[in-house]
Image 1 (tube, rainbow, N blue to C red):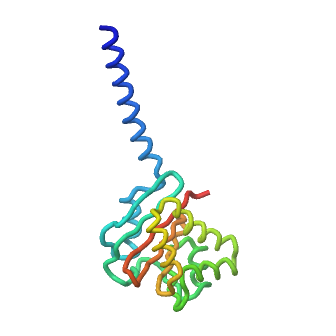
Image 2: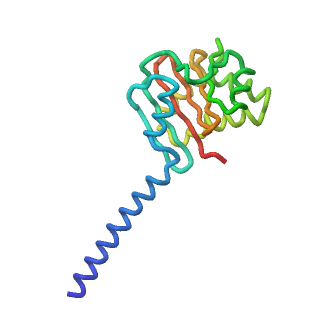
Image 3: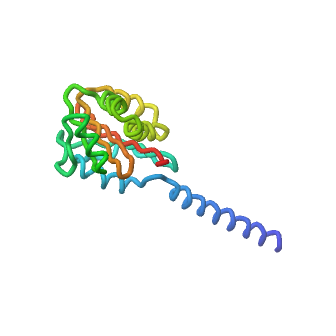
Length: 177
């Protein structure tokens, strides 16, 4: 009898620990999909979620986009300087600058204000560790595409790349330092 009780007790303990570990692991994510979708939905009209992964140090997501326009709820910048002003004012900004890819936008911000540019850059690269390999390649291509739009939210240090050519939105965020 004592042997059966100890096995039962051990099994109960193991199951309890496994449940607690699952709860703790889900609590250790940087972001939850519903929260990210809710924020991003105010930037563009989203379709389904193609990919979402978050852990303690990063978040990466890929969403289908239903319309090619960016919401009037966020500030649109037609120049690097106007976008930088929006960031300093704490506003989410979409850099809609003809013929400049999101990578070129980030490079120009870094040229004008290195700390500000590094903040944008780290948001864009911060989610890389949470991306599947195929997503990394697609994200890299979108970053280099001059028809893509960089969207930066300084409040939570997140970055999105609106890939207009393929009607999808990449979301990236690293753990704020």
